[in-house]
Image 1 (cartoon, rainbow, N blue to C red):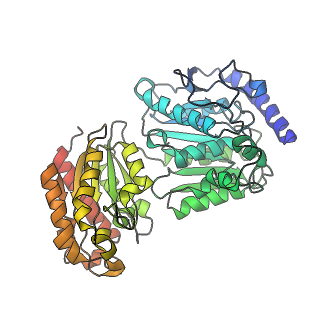
Image 2 (cartoon, rainbow, N blue to C red):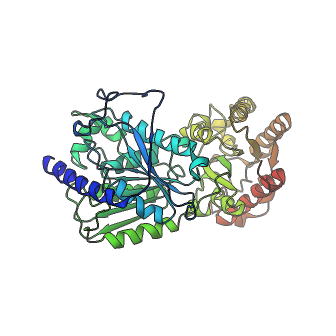
Image 3 (cartoon, one colour):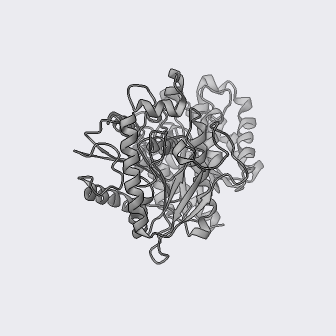
Length: 491
């Protein structure tokens, strides 16, 4: 650990010298002007970097206005959570990104000293600050990425995986990252600094980010590392990439044959130019909605989630809807397989974290497509509570700051009794209740049941779930309803 610390300090000093030569214009923005929300036991006084005491702030580098794309990247330099390598993993990157028209900010975060919530809160607040200044800095609030190196990669991936939606980034770039907090599977020094000298197994798992990836909830990722890294095991990145892939999160990974650990923007890294080319190509492949796009939340069960559709992030109905609506809309998939509207059902939607995240998203438009799983016998015995439970969801969504337009979709026609789903209950019980709810609340209805009637070719073999063709049909019906209501104009 001492050797590793020394190497990083040396590289940081050298990189800092290079940074001074860039003559890059920048300004600092302090976080927590109203007071720190938590403490590591050593903060609150003057900054003493030699003792690991940092004042939480971001250094912002804006590109020339003629080049600006609206994109910004927040960098979290590494240092094993025991110091911050602000030079080669932070400030030195500014000219590279600014030349591409990308704004860039470097986070100086408070070290944890066994209090993991401290750096996490600083990183979250940094993204909030960036989005609050979007207009002044000519930033697209929907094109905010996070970048992290080594332990900073752990911090960045923690924000990408766990942060509330107002401070969750839109993409993530991780250099030779610490991902796991399980001792002897990662960089142990980072574990001890982050969660303490004697972390419980539960704490180790809680902050092992490869274990907390949820479908549709995690932004696209790029991982860049060296195969001969002896500081942070390459398995950290491989496990993270595998978990992302299993959840169908768009991800790419480049493992360079040599370079070891901690190269950052150091031109002496043998694969430096290739790495920069790979990074640029990946960034150029990212798309983003307009900065003032309407937020659309697709709430639902497995049909919204994309069950049975290969690459649902590409061919599920919310993904297709997003492409059909274009960049004036930002569509998010909040579908969770097997869930019910009924709160006494076997998997109540409103008791799932995804519903909380949906509300954090603060949508302008919500499409609710629940009711299929409610038709199962073990759930429908609580049918007398369906209207009350649905009204609670409607009221909670109506109360959001965005005051969203809400659409109620009838369940897709069930052409079999697979999973104990009953189309008779859907037709004679669920749909009439949805119709009454729509009339009472003056909401638009999207009739997916009639659209699918007579089209078994739009379903997979179980007769319940749409295939990619069926998903495209749903997307078209939802698109027509939204555009009809908005007149193809944003509110």
